[in-house]
Length: 341
Ligand code: SF4
Ligand code: SF4
Image (cartoon, rainbow, N blue to C red; front, side):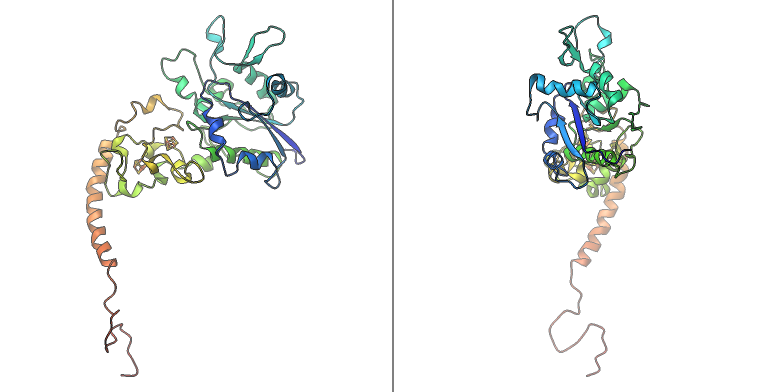
């Protein structure tokens, strides 16, 4: 990959089927922040220009010009970020589900799937932000009318950019802000020739961010281990009986927190509903029911956990007492043989 890239453009399509929650979430990032990246506060990075309608200074034609420049190959290199799910425009004879800009020759809106066709072949990397863009998310539920899907479902799971980079998926509903900015930072270092190929798992997620389960990073893990399960909200104990899917969900949010290290679903009382997973939401519904297998696992853990709590109580009582040789008086009882006696 080239090592003398001076400018990189981020072409960020927000108009997929979604709520724009990922863009809004990313404005809270701190590791790094958008400001750090675009103002050149991070050593070694090329100059970065982010084009996203929610944070852009330009509007109308001036804003859309960046998209046409990218299409004509005049923005090189650029990273294509896609937000929201991709509706299937082929399942109907007229109209459109989601569009961005107007075609100058036909006067018709340009569907976002056309923009993927136009820009993906020219992009250095394609990043899907949020669960709608990565796997389809809520819009792709059973019974949906749009045939919505994720970017990799649309382009193909084997698709690679002209730089040989597979589609990078950063899921979450919405995305955890720093997870996205850290991934973008990694790609920018890769563009600058300062990082090897980004490591991704089979679902296209950065491995260092999604390699562990929610449960493995949860503040309530010790309650689970000791068989102490909450039966109502407001309890500090493990939330599995209230519907937490944490033991089988890949997500670092309890470890990382949400903003500036604060928050993180189960840590602050919310069950994990598996929002980073390809099977979300259908495979996790109905929310707030005990997940399958939880009855068996919590019954087993309750027996073991009860015994463990009893033993730990004994040890805890012991270590809560000071050793007996710390006292006043004329006798030394520490075990040291005093030569002066
Ligand atoms: S609240 Fe969820 S993630 Fe946390 S320990 Fe319980 S089951 Fe695991
Ligand atoms: S902890 Fe669960 S619900 Fe919360 S962000 Fe992670 S996957 Fe989504």
